[in-house]
Image 1 (cartoon, rainbow, N blue to C red):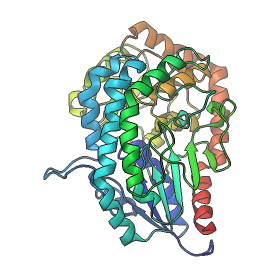
Image 2 (cartoon, rainbow, N blue to C red):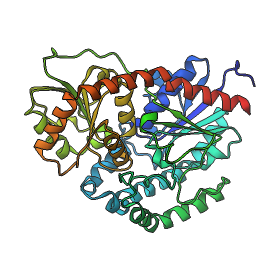
Image 3 (tube, one colour):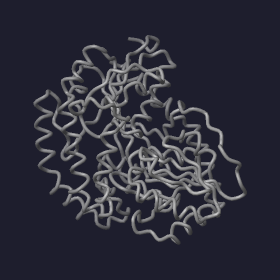
Image 4 (cartoon, rainbow, N blue to C red):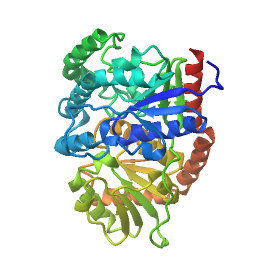
Length: 426
């Protein structure tokens, strides 16, 4: 096989919007280079990927229902049902949020294993790309190169010199040991059972307490100026994509006249916005500021009433909106965090679960934004954070320069190059 011959690339992204959008961005570059791009996405994405020009060969992660579901509906429902647990510390969440997420992911991996084998037989990929946090043995036993993408915070790749993933703990080492011991206590049993099943399916054993293997090539999405590679170096199979921002979002024109004050984007992501009570609380505080806001309202948009200084919708073209604004208020999902920095914008981060705490902590301790306590912040704290970040001209200039550099590095094309190279090498 030569680099000049078209490849068949099979993507399997996690059902949430962040990883799927990341794969859409990379897949779009590969397709434009003449390769065949197929998505083995979760079934609720039906039609949404073909609309962008990709092939779909979809999987169910649970027994299908007769009702049509929105994209990623399973995780939206999960987040809505577990929302009260987000008021707990990250250590307490290990048992009531993090482990149940792993349990659901394990169930999904087991359920779709036969479907994935059938898809691989039909598609006959030259290379398989997975953007998820859990192993699917069929992807590893297919006999073709396997590329892993980490589009969560890169603490997912563990090391002694960095805080434990999902902890949101400071870089000083405070609390690391206690959090790691609790992770071991709450996750050892589910990991052991999953590892045994993975080996039974013909895949190699998993690294200890990790739920996914490394690939023949490994990509991760995080800007160099936030990265952890000084504290935790990575091996030669790893390539950093400083950013990976899709180019498939539709055009956007501001639906209102811009005033003299700041324009701010507020989004808790497709999952976090399902916490309607929190959305309403933030909207209420923002309504008492002089600024204008664009709000991503999410799946329960009909239950969220915006103030007169706001415009919003269920879905908004985030990658076209962020370049227009002065500040981003976010849950700290990796996708939004990286996109904000890609366009040189400071952040206020209100983390809810999973790696959002890690992003919030890193953005705050590196000085590119403010981490607030999502459920305990005072009105004055949020307003003061807005005023400080909007008024910090030195920070804004620094971020503008860093964003320009991230865009120049062109992570989408770096990712496509790695995927082509590992496929051709075989």
